[in-house]
Image (cartoon, rainbow, N blue to C red; front, side, top):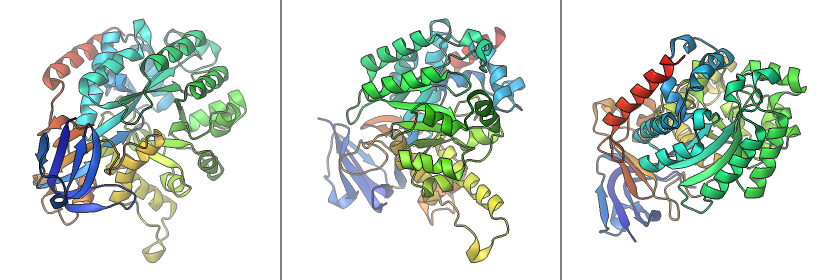
Length: 462
């Protein structure tokens, strides 16, 4: 079995139960799992692969809990630049209708490459439309080529405009096919074991694009197979109005009516939730994927992250789709989460100052959302921290950069407070994916050229 030794890191941040931060730290791993973590002098002194990370900070791999890989092909589309969610979707649905299997593969490679370079080691993606023969299998193959862990969500849309939904009929699918394909994917790909590189999630898109019956049947199937459930919820005020008018419920109550609450469920956004609904999440163990950049980009609002965390709700970070971000930089998302939480606190308690002011979200709390928080949201006990028994998923950043000059009084805080940077090293299950800031698994020059050709063709068809 292959062994890996990391030694001499200026600081190794474990995010373990004690939140240890170890100077001159390191770890020893065997066959992709960590066996020892501690000061370098206490570790074995040899291994098949030895990484001397003096001058670097080592962190647990970041966990992305919500994304739409295919949207890398429609970044900064002019007509969608200044639109709120519903108008943004109506602009982009016709473009996305032209996606091909090759587009799904190429866009997934692109998003995963960006994520890897920004420190992500585990990514959840939500693919909810399948035009022209596209399949979830296409992005699964892309993830294998890049080397990141993937939680692939079999999304779906079945409620077209003719039935009162938001998406045009040509991008929705029959519920019979959706459920049959969901079962196929779980049976073929889902791996629940520790260290799993691939898990399947069932993820009807949103209350305004699927029927209640599809939500119910997806929940029944997910629980029969033991897989997780995911959907968008309470993202905008428009969605709240839609749910009240069409179903007679606010979004969270609508989920309760469909048996869509529990520790196997996580929701993207949850911007427009009230204190009672936060308690519903906490009582039932629901998780939240917080997507601060997308929420700002679409002017959706500011999610009540402090209230969710204080209530005991598992909260992770998501970069969301690359047409509403418009990138896939997970370390930058941690910084945005910290800054936006501070802004929300200021807006809510603007009259308070000094000792009466609410405590600000710290860099360490933001990093916790990006690591332990994301792992908890995805239901993974084998990732999110650096400790014995966990996967050897970690990243390293060289602190001897102009970007961190003068900021090394607190290196951990610096990687969140300072302008977001790419990582120098990214290791997934003991395998080096990024080294010297370069992706080792895919030719990014060729990928960029292929991606740009696909994006130009896609927009030319509309």
